[in-house]
Length: 123
Ligand SMILES: Cc1cc2nc3c(=O)[nH]c(=O)nc-3n(C[C@H](O)[C@H](O)[C@H](O)COP(=O)(O)O)c2cc1C
Image (tube, rainbow, N blue to C red; front, top):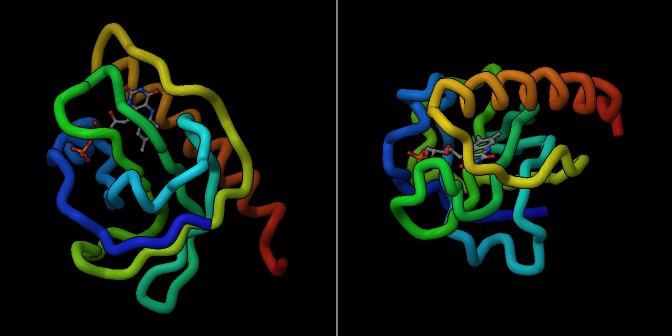
């Protein structure tokens, strides 16, 4: 479980088409860098999510961070407490040739996370 308060990111996630809620990397001590399917608990709701923990080498500006794209929730989350229950490790981080390629990979991460979260419903 990664728990923290949502901070401002670099604002690039929205441009890729996958806006993210960012947490400081210290919230994820001991967590291996990579991409995870997760359940996000925020503002009393529970949503599927995809989470990147690491240095985001395609857009390397900025410090390593935890970035969660929360499915089915588009509210303003800045400043809210966010808990991420990591359900499955999907893949390691990669440096993509273009932002468009990264976007296509994240779309497939989203599909995988939806399936994994559906299997965990009710737990
Ligand atoms: C599910 C997911 C997977 C990601 N995978 C990678 C990756 O493999 N390589 C990479 O460089 N960045 C990856 N990113 C990070 C994006 O580059 C990041 O969201 C982008 O830098 C926007 O950051 P910002 O919200 O702080 O602006 C991923 C982000 C998400 C949400």
